[in-house]
Image (cartoon, rainbow, N blue to C red; front, side, top):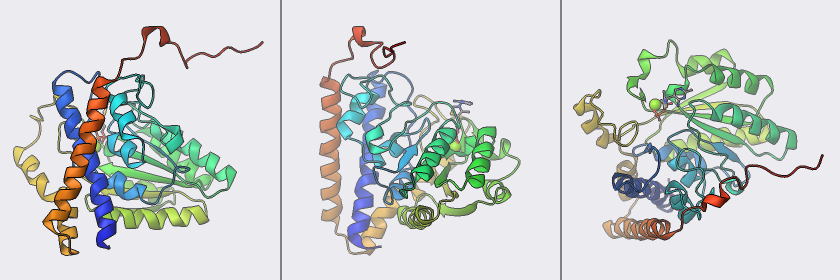
Amino acid sequence: MKLEELARLYRQMLVIRRAEERLQKLFADGLVPGFLHLSIGQEAVPVGVSQTLTDRDTVSSNHRGHGHTLAKGVDLNGFFAEILGKATGLCKGRGGSMHVADLGKGMLGANGIVGAGLPITTGSALAHRMQGQGHVAVVYFGDGALAEGVLHECLNIAALWNLPILFVCENNGWSEFSPTERQLATSLDKLARAFGIKYTAVDGNVVADVATASARLVKAMRKTPAPAVLECSTTRVRGHFEGDRQDYRDPAEITALSERDPIRQCAAAMVHAGATPEMLDEIANAVEAEIEAAAQAALDAPLPRSEDILADVYTSVKV
Ligand SMILES: Cc1ncc(C[n+]2csc(CCOP(=O)(O)OP(=O)(O)O)c2C)c(N)n1
Ligand SMILES: [Mg+2]
């Protein structure tokens, strides 16, 4: 991959990383309402996948959705304000971390119910198929969703109806506090095979590999609608949610994660392709400034007004 392209991917991953690190601090200061599930260590998956998507393509996400949302190109200020529950947020502060959405960018929403993004995205893929414009739908889900019946139903109907949907599994080996092998009697490749769906596995921490694999799969389904599965092995660095001390995890496992860090690996690839330390610093400084400005704007923004609590919930209907 060319240096210019790697630099773009690097920058996008860094935006997600720094945004989440900033949110981590804001959460510790009690400024983020609700739970916070950080995707630190998993940034290469949404950044790699999003390279091949347009605003007309749809994605949906799960509880660990900040990376999916930012990689789809939503406004950073609106994103920060949303997570802080402010009126200037993408959903006017009513969604927050687990319900952030931006339909204008094709981001159908994060979702706190494991597996719930799957049928939403399958429906969106059906709409794409019926409209026949070559748009595709992408659903991000974790290994924790592999044992959910709804995944099996969606694989079935997507195969039966030739829906243009990319099932992207972020397999980080953990579902809350349980390792995947304690919950699943099969594997995703076998599930895909059972439904006759094309299956590809990649190292989800190597952004160029994710980008190449997803571009190939999406290009094919734009031409001839059909589902595909992309399983990305990746790493959850933080606890399941902020505040989780990860006592159930071997500390050596956590220490070893830095070797697979997607941002570190991308930086190494950039240096190999000719990047200088100054170039890396320049990107890092620009990202830092962008994040700080968005965080500060969100902190300064007003909360939603209590009298607006039912706005956008009910509409008057003539009977
Ligand atoms: C239907 C349902 N069951 C259980 C939960 C509780 N829960 C929230 S996240 C989670 C684990 C999800 O693991 P995974 O899908 O692998 O995502 P990760 O947290 O690893 O990114 C569980 C069991 C839930 N939110 N919804
Ligand atoms: Mg998981």
